[in-house]
Image 1 (cartoon, rainbow, N blue to C red):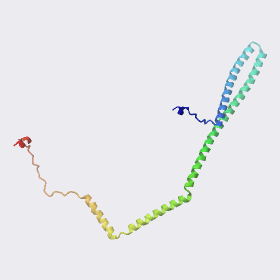
Image 2: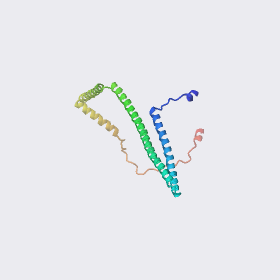
Image 3: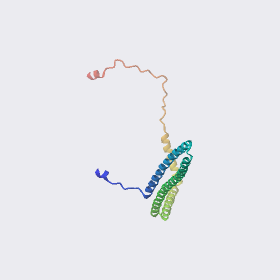
Image 4: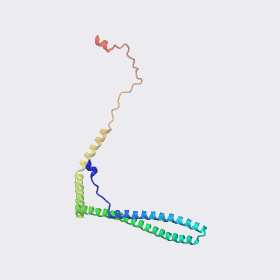
Length: 200
């Protein structure tokens, strides 16, 4: 039992799987960076408003320049995320295509083996033999059917009629007339008991 659970499983992770994993990890890191940038932009916008209210126009201007640069970084980050996602989808779809191609390859090999076992010539030979056997049986049937004379046909019909009549025979009707009145049967009185009869 220890061997069953202690046995190492062979890893089926391919290079493509590793590449997809790395791309997804990079995409997730970019999304976190994007989120931090967005939060920073909102803070800097609020700070720029406060600086303008305090009359510090130059500092507000510098802050807005920094904010603009970060907005450009945010756009670039979005483009990079889109590129990573597209690449992940391309790799995953290519993996599916490879499996389809592998399936087609196995299917073709299987068909080729079957064709080697059963060639067109072999199929034609079997079909020809089958047609010959059907034709031979038809000829036998015709010979058997043609060997009966008219007398034989009449005898067969007579036997068939006789069998049919046997199946249709009904019981004979009684010739005596039925009684007009059915006599009443009176109950037996003082009938001796079986044990008394046996004793006497």
